[in-house]
Length: 202
Image (cartoon, rainbow, N blue to C red; front, side, top):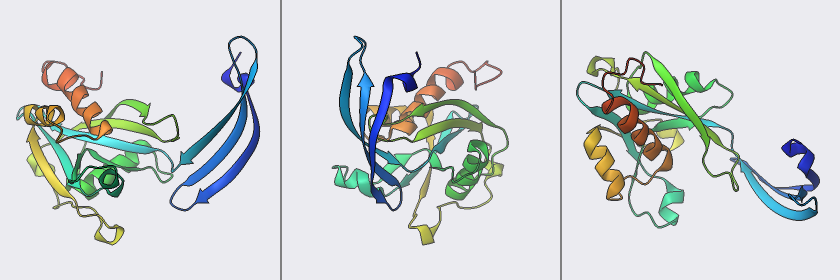
C-alpha cells in the first residue's frame, strides 16, 4: 500500500498566495489499525531550493555569507545570520541555480559543483526541499565582490573561515542556520578529515 492509498483529501482552502502559497487542508489518514482519522494541516509552498558550500582543502577554509533575515529576527535572533549561499530554484535546475546564486552572493565562479544530498527542512508544515552542493574553490575564482542584489533587499557580507572556526561557531551559537550546519558537518566528515578521498561527494 502506498501513502496515497492512505490519504483522502476532503477540502483544500487557499489562505495566502503572495510570496508563497499557504493552504489549509482537511484530510483523512488511514492509521495502522485500519481506522480513518480526520486531520487538519496547513502547508506553505514557496518552491524548492539549493545551497552550496565552497571549500579549499589545502587551506582548510570555507566560504559563507552573513545577512539580515527578518524571520530569524522576529524569532529572537538579534544578529545577522551566517549561512551557506542558497536560493530558490525558480524553475531552473538545482545545479544551474546554485552556480548563479553562489556567484551572485559570494563573487566566486565555481567550476566543479557536486551534489551531496537533498532534504526536507521543515516537513511538518513547509513543502520546500533543499538540494545540497559542495564545490572546491581557489582565490582566483573570485570575479567580483559578491554581496547579492540590492534591489532585492540583499546586503550580503562574504566570509572566508577556517573549517575549525566554522565548526566552533556552531557550538557557541554563532551559526544557527540548519542548512549551513548540515553542509559544515558534511565537510568535517567527508572533506577535511578524509583528505585523501578522491571524490568528496561520496
